[in-house]
Image (cartoon, rainbow, N blue to C red; front, top):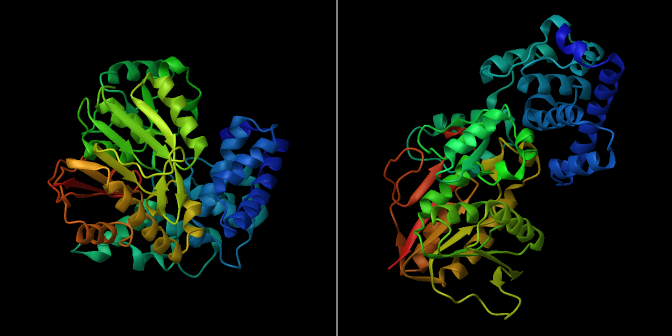
Length: 442
């Protein structure tokens, strides 16, 4: 602790402690109004240029740890100072000097302070009991809103065990995953090593590597960045389930910033065509920028317009009618599978959001299916693990579209056979939770 205290002057540590408490209160109010914490933080830092990277990192960690453990540390009797100390320590590897000051103010003995990174959830619960002075340790079920359990998809078998795995996984910060370009794995590893960055290869996906934190990655030179993308492991699995072939023509319907389109292009060796569309022009602009950095030339982008869950191109005001070898629908969803990475979302999302997203997903999937050629693939993916947005959407679609059937695909992370519906669970990375369904037009 003395070493950590000496890294930051006492005056600066005190100032950071005050800022952390006030910022948590400010972001908490914004999240209650359904504003994403990362957006609020970005605006805050943009208005306060005086913060260096070290200060921004501490404040960000304090905020996101608060939301990750809010279900344990925010009863009415707990002060914001005490909540900040407890939640930060539950994720931290060491005790920050500002946390020492807040603990002193909150009446938590210094001898009881310890960073909990790597400890089990049960061990963390006992420490929370000590820090907060409660009669009993908090339960793992309290880390999420009560309504969530009823909407999650639970495979046949031990439902209780599966739910516990989900809950524990949501409390672990996943690493930043890299997708290294095919054939460039060794080059990327050497370049990262020179920069002091270690990417631990995935045991099955040789192009995937796990890095602790992503801030250092984003500051690398473009010649290094051109050989890899920051892309979650679950998201990479979508590309492997699509299994595009060189020279094929694909449509990435809800492309966003283009991560999955870039993966398709890599798998296709940049030969063929990929139409990347989205209703957000800014996202497509970022997609074009990333493609240029990566040297990808087979992707073209177009803006979609949306009304009553209808999607069409503004230039012609007609639905896209081309026949594609493959169509990927990475549909907008509740994002529950990303709650380990975006912990504030669990306090923003409401159960009615899940139902509304399922309606939108069904509408987009129905329209996108029209553009799949005979023998072509239709792939549906959502970074959520609710029943309404996953198996229900697919089962209803197949009931109404006799020309399509599930296309068995091997599980990208295990190689196990599937019926065409693939689940990526958050503890398998650790990574985001993802549902992927691959269908074929008969």
